[in-house]
Image 1 (cartoon, rainbow, N blue to C red):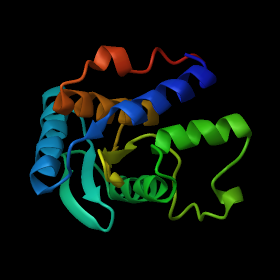
Image 2 (tube, one colour; image 1 turned 180 degrees about the vertical axis):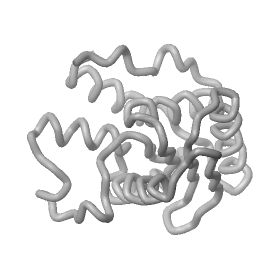
Image 3 (spheres, rainbow, N blue to C red; image 1 turned 135 degrees about the vertical axis):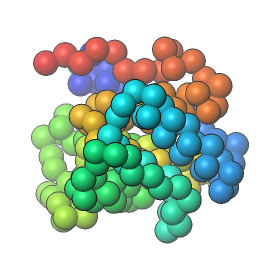
Image 4 (cartoon, rainbow, N blue to C red; image 1 turned 30 degrees about the vertical axis):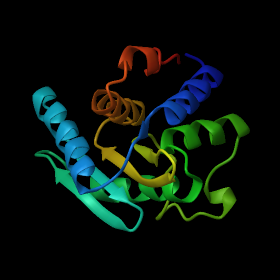
Length: 166
C-alpha cells in the first residue's frame, strides 16, 4: 500500500474500532488478549491499556528492555494529544513533510511511531489508548488492530493494512 492508502485505511480503522465502554474489565480483556497473542507468537512486547491519566492494564513480556515502556509512554502521549493513532499521526506528518518537533513537541515525550491506538467509546469519544512496543512500528500498529478486531468481533481481514511498499 502507498502512503495515501495507508492513511485512509488507518482512518477507517480509527472510525470502525469503537468500544461500547471502557472499564477495568474491558481493559483486562483487551490486555490479556494482546498478551496471549504475543506469548503464542513468541513476541517480546510491552502492553499498556489506559484511560487517559489512569493505567488499567500493563504487561512486559520476556525479552523487552527499559526502552519499551518509554516508547509506550511517548506513543500514548501522541494519542492523548491528537486523538489519532500514533501510526496514523506519523503517516500524516510524513505526507506533510513535518515532524512532531516542528509542532513544538519534545522528542523525549512524543513519538509518532506505530503502536498506540485510541480507545473510542461510543457516546463518549476518545477516552484512552492501547499501546504496544517491541515490534517494527507497522507491526505494532497492526497487532493492536488485530486484537481490537477480535475483541469487538470485527473481521480483521477487512480492516488490516495491505502489504507495505518500499
